[in-house]
Amino acid sequence: MSEKDLATLCATIEPEMAAPVYVYCSFPDFALPEGLSALFTFRELEGLTAVFDLQDAERYMLPYTFKARLITIKVHSSLEAVGFLAVVSAHLAKAGIPCNAIAGYYHDHILVPVDRADEAFVVLEGIREANVQASRL
Image (cartoon, rainbow, N blue to C red):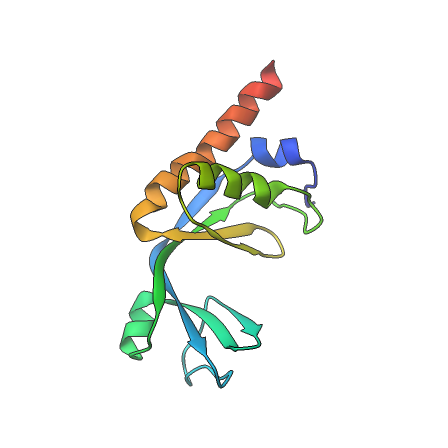
């Protein structure tokens, strides 16, 4: 069952970092290269944004930006939960770490710069620890 309660969500954050490095690409013609599978896509007026594994982008010689690691927040958050990603992004912002959030059906996901990924992971674990301690008081 999906969770809506902010305190529960924050106390049960379980971050999991994916191994690949991902990058953002843009396709003004709204078409992905044949045979290339994206982590996700988003249709914008200017074109199709796609996030790929860096190795795939380089193999296809695609221009890209923002080398990132994907951290999945392993708590089944409701798509109607209020403030959860705001808490996550505020903690990361306080640490000076940019993040790009994606809400999936079961989990929220963030892409953070490769060189700050380990630090972002620790920040996320800190949210859980702070909320677990607060619930004990």
